[in-house]
Length: 103
Image 1 (spheres, rainbow, N blue to C red):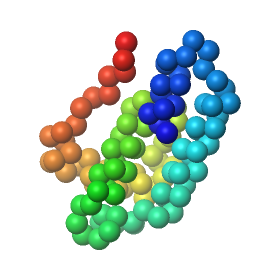
Image 2 (cartoon, helix red, strand yellow):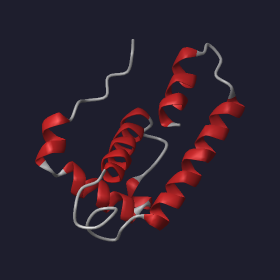
Image 3 (cartoon, rainbow, N blue to C red):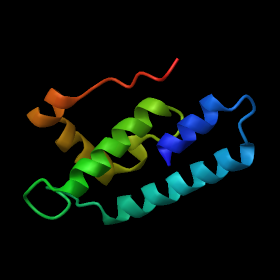
Image 4 (tube, rainbow, N blue to C red):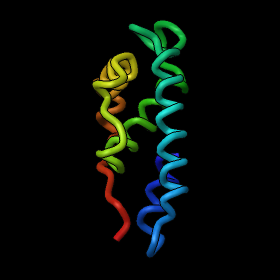
């Protein structure tokens, strides 16, 4: 949803406020659900990194970069901790790329 919201905002001369509000609400609801389900420590399914950890971390990293006004990780402490643990890993640092919006 964060990707589609980005493109709604930049590709339309007049972005639809209804679509923007709906996307923002869906993102907020998803973040609330993920926060409730996120592990307080470790990874999503235990001690080993899983696809879930990678997907959630990548989605959060994109959403933060593309929509700095959309979410504050401080409002989602479990997701913030998971995001921090993953982003601190060498494999994440090695493959990190800055968000460069299309011109």
